[in-house]
Amino acid sequence: KSLKKTKKVSSSSSSSSPSLSCLPDEIVLDCLVRVPRRDYENLSCVSKRLRSLVRSPELHRLRSRLHKDSVYICIWERDNYSTDPTYLWFTLQRTTTTEYQLVPIPFPSRYFMFRSSTVAVDSEIYFVGGHPKPTELWILDTRSGKLRQGPIMRKPRSVARSAVGVVDGKMYVTQELKNGSIHEDVFDIQSQTWKDAGVPVPDEKECTRDMVRSSVTLEGKVYAMNTGSITVYNLRQGGRKEKLEMPIDDWVWCICVADNMLFAFFTKCGLMWLDTKRNIWRVVSGRMPRKLYGGAMVEYYGKLAVFWRQEYIGARKKEEEKIWCALIALGRIGEEEVGGTIEWSGVVATIPYVCGFLHCLVASD
View: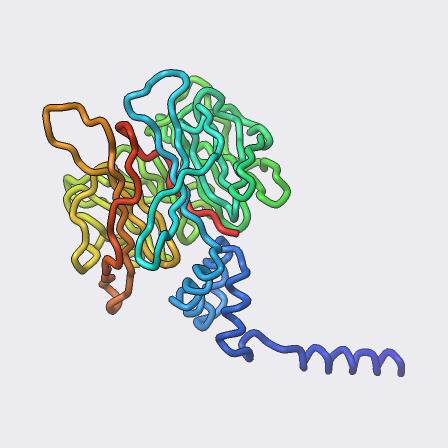
C-alpha cells in the first residue's frame, strides 16, 4: 500500500511540474539569455517556438544589454616577417549610443597564433596546431587574459591550418591531405581530452591540400575557407567532404554564421548567403558594400559586423591603416531572399603601420 501511495504521489508531482511550453515568452527569453550561445542551434531543433525565440531580435537585445558577447580581433603587422612579429588584440566597444571603436586589450602575443586555427567556445578562444608545433593546443581565457596550454594531440599533423568546428560539445579538427584522405581529431570540451576519431593516421610526409584561413560551423558541418574558395566537411559523418558550388570566377574574402545562416563576402558579387536547402548562393538584397579590402566578418548580437581596411592607391608607401566597420541588420524576405540594412558604418581604429586581420571571433560569458 505504501508503495502504491508513493507511486501515486510521484505521478501526481511529475504531472504538475511546469513545462517550458506553458511559460510566457518573457520568462523563456530570460532563461535563454543565460544559456551558452553554442547550445542555441540544438535548442532551435526542439520546437518551432524555441526556434523562433532563439532567433528573435528580443533575445539579441537582452544579450546586448547584459554585455554577454564580445568581438575580438587580432591584427598583425604585414611588413614584419621576423621571428617576433607584432600582434595586437582589439575588442569592439560602443563609445556612444551611435558610435563604435576598436579598443586595444593586453592579450598575450605569441608567434604560434599566426599559423593556428581558432574557435571560440563560450568565453575561451582555442588555438589549434599551426607552426612550429602542429600538435599543440592553447586556450585563451578572454575574461582574465590568461593563456594556458591544453593537452597535446595524439596523432602527427601537418603544420598547415586545419578546419575547426564545434558540434555537440566536441571540437573537430579536420585536415584534407593531398591523397584525398581526411585526417580528423576530436577534442571533448567538457573533459578536456582528445578522443579517437576512428580515421586513419596520415603519413607524416603527406602534406595538406590547402591552407585553411578560417572556418565556421553550421548544422553539423564545418565550412572551411581556403585560397579563395570554401570546402565543406560533414562532422556527423566522419568529416565526409561535400560539394559546394561557388560563384563563377569569384573569390571569397571572409565567411561567418549569423542567424543560423552562412554568409560570405565575395570580391565580385559582394555579400551573399547560402541557401542550404538548394545548396546555392544568393545575393543579400539592399544597399550593401560591394567591395572589401582585406575583410573580416563576425556575428554581433544578430547583426553582421563587417571589418575592412581602407584601400590605398598611390606611389608613396602607406604609413598607417584605417580600419572600417559596418553593422548590418538582417531579415528574411520569404523563403529565397535575405535583406540587409546598414545600421552604422565608420572608422573604428587607425593602426600606425600596414596591417592585416589574423583572427576575428565572438566570445560569450
